[in-house]
Image (cartoon, rainbow, N blue to C red; front, side, top):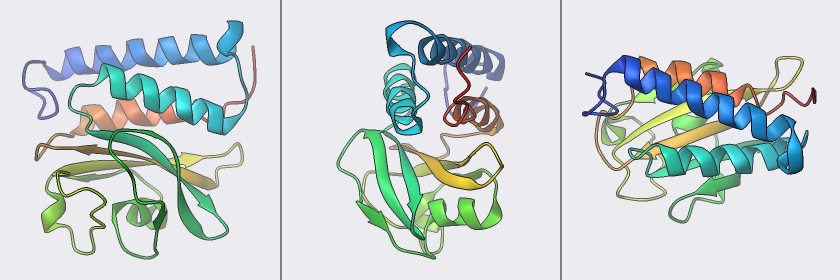
Length: 168
């Protein structure tokens, strides 16, 4: 069983992420929702993920703007507008340049608590077309140990759509 979804196997969760990716890819590249704008893409991604993934308590992006992490499009309770460096899971994702999974945010040194109900977290760096980190996807759960390798793989695939501005 995957920790993120007690009623689903990792294969079922991976399948859900694949379906979400396909839906997002279609919506962002064709029809009336077609857009190459990264912020609009972040809004669509956070809305769909938040609606489709029941273990996502807060789902959104923090954008790297002039050396600060500034809240971007999100779904869920009110967010911290600015995450000061160098503390927190989001900054660790940027500094390490890779996805960070935190099973228990209370055990993470320097955790920035924007909402006391948050228990676990996953942060996925968003890269532009030249590979520079421009934002992070930040997902919190109100349950501990909610994220696993299946979530990492699925979310990394989905965030690649943010800066995939090539419309086909």
